[in-house]
Amino acid sequence: MELLHLRYFVAVAQELNFSTAARRLHMAASPLSRRIRDLEQELGHRLFDRDTHHVSLTPAGSALLPIARGVLEQVDSIGWRLDEAVRPRRTTLLLGVPTGIHPDLRERMDALAARAGDRFEIKRWPGGTERLVDAVCDGRLALTLARLPVTGDPALEQLPVMSERLGAVVPGERFAGRESVALAELSELAYVGSPSAVTNAYFRGLDRQLHELGIRKRVELGSATFEGVAEIVAGGLAFAISMLDARSPMRNYLVGEVAVLPFTDFHPRLETGLLWRKDRARSGDLGEVIDLAREIFTEPLFA
Image (cartoon, rainbow, N blue to C red):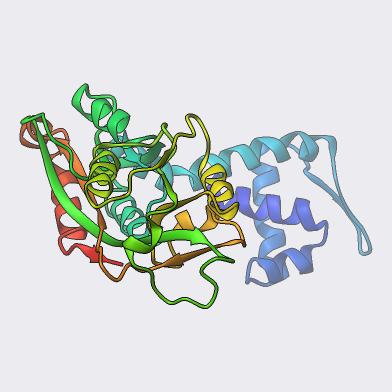
């Protein structure tokens, strides 16, 4: 018995018509009928009842059909099963992602996941910068994007990947029609910083810098969200600082009653870096991924 005999049998069993099955198999009906008779003779069972107008499976044919299908499925799966058997097993790696990552950086993360996909499955893990960096240090994350500066751990290596201009989030009605704003014009308003869950070294430093430049009033929102910050600004009580680029997801948190304006006398930028542990890159378990990351993120982005 050859595999072709089983393929012929299954085709006829599915079509219950020798002419239709023959066309499907790209052969003539007469040789197909002969092959089925050869199979019946070899098995010692009649598989089809057939006359000039009708074809049906016999009890033996009905019993053979699932067996034949199972054999053919096993044979047809040999190629991909062999590929799976010899393909190196993929390792899952976690990549930390802080809030509000720019879409251009997401494109590069997608490229890294695709390029490393044969060996590694890269999954994203959200969080605030400081927690993400701690997770890299203790090995829970393979690498992370983080808002710079990140200092204090010589075991970490960092690659700058993006620099984003920041502007003032101001009450829309009060600054209607304006294309820019001077920091001095905001001295009567309080400054409301980022929610405590995502506050990091950069925003603490920005708060100190604003204080030194004459912005002394503060609004503390504790566990409020970015939407909460926008609502405080919209009410005319305060101003905030956010990304100027309209494509930034941070702009999605804003409400209609606020405006985002560039400063004329203050030029803050938010820097983002990619961080990993030096020893993991050197030991080889992350060496391949880090090399790919260096290649993909080699030129910092500016927005």
